[in-house]
Image 1 (cartoon, rainbow, N blue to C red):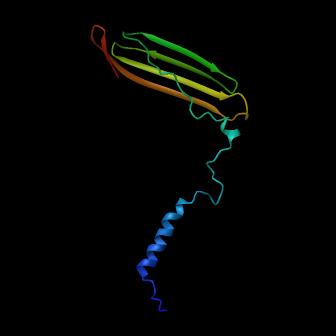
Image 2 (image 1 turned 135 degrees about the horizontal axis):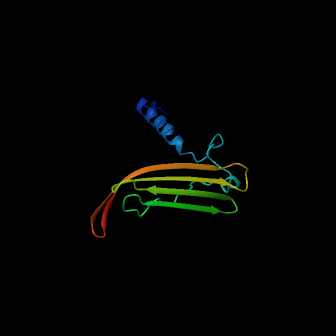
Length: 132
């Protein structure tokens, strides 16, 4: 039997296929640093929502102030919002939110955020207005 050697292009094709398909292996060689145990996941709070700060002020010197508190067995939070229209068309809003973990891992989660914004208001017609 006479065997002919494989051409170089076929050998390269096989090597390239093996390299490209190597990433399809479902297992990992080292432990995944992004895998979190189920017990730890129960402690996580991935998103601390804030209530929308949408005051209904429409004339100069209008003020709006909100305070909200939430609590549960695992976390508690507090939110404060304020809005003020120093002129007929310009408004200022501010908000502060804080939340912390109450149970489980001590001092695991503490969340603080502060927001500040400005906007423009214009009455277009009776019952209609523009805000941005």
